[in-house]
Length: 430
Image 1: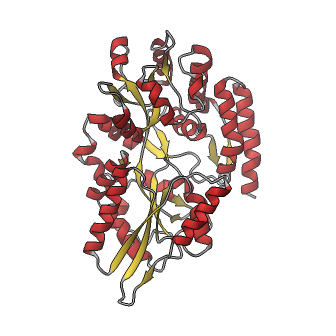
Image 2: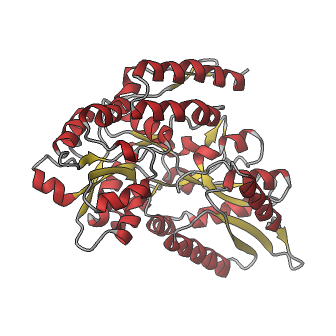
Image 3: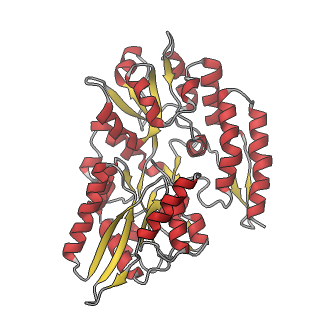
């Protein structure tokens, strides 16, 4: 459950309206005590517990500024927030993902935090992370948790095969990854399973390693789509593994990440590219004695660079207590607290001090591999592109799905992404 997704059903829309209707906004009591609503999207028990405990600690230390924890959902957050913004019932502090902020930021629903955040927090989080929540001249969210895509591998299978094991210091190239996946295949088993039910984000973010960008902003500020040689490296690798080498299972292309885990545990796939947080599910679900390890995603001309859309904390523009909300965010993201949130979500903190925590640098469960990749994480290519959701849903998703399955070739993929895509973007940039 990484980024916010748009609702597509009437039932979900009704649920969003009901949730928004339950939100009372912030206020000040008769005794002068400020009450802030903090809508969290934490969903795993460890993460929910960490968030609630931090709210409890804040409230005990700040009796005049009380924070009320409100549970939200990744599945419905975009539409629920839109409804609450328009109805004047938005929570003061908003947990979301950076790739969901653009419409809210440009629409005037989120506060520019530039003048509210303390220097400590501004300097602790690198500029590459701040860019994910910067739109125009304003900063509309604090990026605090992020996850690289990694390869989760069957360690026993790799050891028996004798292949060179990839490390952050000496990763596989895309060509080497393709060759090794083929070596690991045979007898009804596959070297890799690509879960690409939602192929666009994975493709764009991993393509950064090869220098791919897809979206290019001109001097006039307008964005155009190009799909050149660097952009082809990652998708061509997946296509050839499925359709030429037969080292990747075509059956998993329509799956989500969790759907591939039973086959992975059963020894059907040697490796599965997944988000870093999937390690928690593996720890919980893997059969006794199953030996697994975390490897970096393949490297290209730009090394291990990949795109991310961090989780963010924002403040509603309508909140009458922006300064107090920013103080709570600063508390929540103190290095020791950011570590607690990262451990609860099995993700990486953006803060440089938090990343130094020994608990995040242990080899157990692959933490050290993820931490080693943190400096190579960049803003996702489509982060601030107006019209991206429509391009993704109507053009890119079906085009990539058909290309990966072998239904269309690279030339038709390029034509649809670029020609049809630029027509979509042009409507948003008039």
